[in-house]
Image 1 (tube, rainbow, N blue to C red):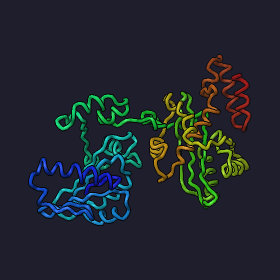
Image 2 (spheres, helix red, strand yellow):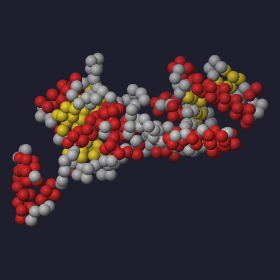
Image 3 (cartoon, rainbow, N blue to C red):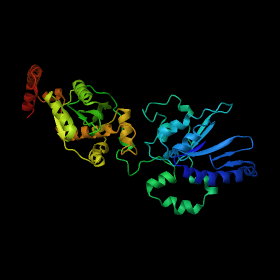
Image 4 (tube, rainbow, N blue to C red):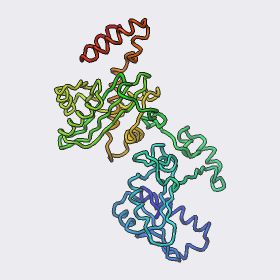
Length: 398
C-alpha cells in the first residue's frame, strides 16, 4: 500500500509517473503482464501480488483500502501525513504470510517538531517525548539531489536549488530538518531544567490559568501552569496540568494547584468566565492578578519569546514542549491551552520578576558577625508572624 495525504497527488506522482517509469527501466517487459484496476486503484502482478495506492483525504476510499491487509506500507511525502493517520494505517500491516513486515517513509524534511524527526532522528515517542522501546526498528537515510545526479539536470541544482533562500536550500538541496519563519518557539530554545529545585529556591513563583469555554460548553479545556523564577534568573516550569473540567472541578483544580505550589501571584484573563474565576478565587484568599486579554494568541506568544532567546526559560513537561514546538497549531486536535497558560505565566514573570532577588543568607553578608547573628535571629522570629518578616526585610535591605 502506497499512501499520501491526498489521493490526487499519489495518483499523479506514483501511478502515472514513478511506477510506470521504474517498471520500464528496471523490469522491462513486465508491464504488459500486469492487470491495472482504475476503479479501486491497484496493480496486480503475474504472481498475484498487488500494489494499492490511496490518499487519506477521502473517507470512502480510505476505508476501502484500509479494509485490506498488507505486508508492506509506503508513506510517500510523509511530512504531510499526521501521526494519527499513520497509526491508523499501521493497523493494516497484518497480512499473514512468511514475509517480513516493513514500512517505508520518504519526505522532504519538515520542521524538527514533526513526528518524523521525533521517531527517526531523536528516537522518542512523538506524543510523550519518552525514548522508544524499539528504537532499533527505525533507521533513516539522507538522500540529496547530488546523490542522484545521473538522473537530475545539473542546471536544476545550479540555477534553482542553489539559489533558494537559506531555509529552503537547507531543506530541498541538503535534506536538513530545519525551523522556518512560522516557528514562534524554535526547537533550540526548548530546554529542560538541569536540576529540580525546591520551592525555597524560587524567590518568585507564579501561576496562570487559561480556561477555554463558550456559551455552549458545560466543561472547558483548561491548563494551569506554575513557573518559578530562580535566583540565577532562570525561569523553570514547575508544573503544568490540563484537562476538561466543569466549573466546579476547574475551581477545585486551581485551588489544589495553589495549595501545592503556593504562588505569589495567580493570573487569569480579565474577560468573561476568566474574570468570574478570578473573582471567586480572590474571595478564597488567592492573590489573583487579572491580565489584559489579547485576542491574537500569536502576538501574545511573541511578546515572551525574548525570554526564550535569552536562554532563561526551562520547559520540563513533555506535553508542554510538544505544544510549544507545534505552535501555532495546524489543526484542532488535542489541548492547545498549555501554550496560553504558559505564556500568561511568563507575562507574570515579566511583571513581577524585575526585582533584585537575593538569597536570604545574602541579606546579612556585609554585616559584622555579631550584627549578622542578631538580624538572622530576629528575622527567623519575625518569619513566624505572617506579613511581618517580609516587611522588616524590605526595610532593612532598603
